[in-house]
Length: 247
Ligand code: NAD
Ligand code: 4PL
Image (cartoon, rainbow, N blue to C red; front, side, top):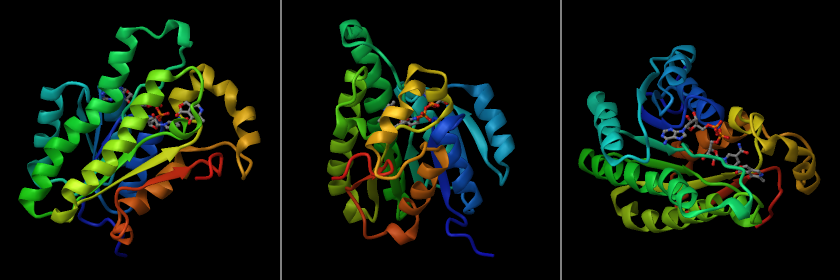
């Protein structure tokens, strides 16, 4: 059977656990060769082994330009990337009173500057190789909602959405599309281990469809947005949050 991503080379950042792992799992099942990039090397290794389908892991700190350059080069050894999913991020829960310049800089580095770094390198390679590249940036519906206890995070995700629009404009002429997916509260490994885990009841009251967001809800839409079926969509942000925000 021919799968929709057969033969594609995909990189998913932050894929050792949570939403990134679910996306890597889905893209591999769709036929892609997937590189799982994560700062947590041990967990990324075991995730790649569990996923199978030739998935491999590469240790990478997405906030570090040298680490990102070597990730994209190593991932491209057996073919320029066709698909890049920027998913890695820190998901903090921090009172506004505790937000200082060190926290702000770290969140902007890991959650926003990282997206510039991977895209800078990957779009150059896709263009050189003449690939119809697909870039998917994982944002968050906190940008639309202004969710509390995450001020720097919300700002970084707004930056991701803005950059998605701008980069789509820059690289559309090379056949590369760039979109963002904004999940609502999702029961990932990171969320389960944080105070965000207490917010499900409140968030469900705001959703049009009741239920607890799961990483697979996000991966289903990610699979579509990186596929040929989405070739006429670019510069867009798709909320995947059971209708919590409706614009
Ligand atoms: P998670 O904490 O479960 O997983 C994040 C992964 O990113 C981890 O494997 C971690 O090791 C990796 N990572 C962190 N810093 C890194 C770095 N510097 N370099 C490389 N890898 C790094 O998170 P999650 O909940 O699965 O979130 C995944 C994405 O979805 C993030 O972009 C997050 O902002 C977004 N998101 C999550 C939710 C949610 O409720 N879970 C909602 C909206 C958006
Ligand atoms: C609605 O991106 O989208 C909590 C934690 N609540 O990280 C998020 C909502 C969180 C979110 C998010």
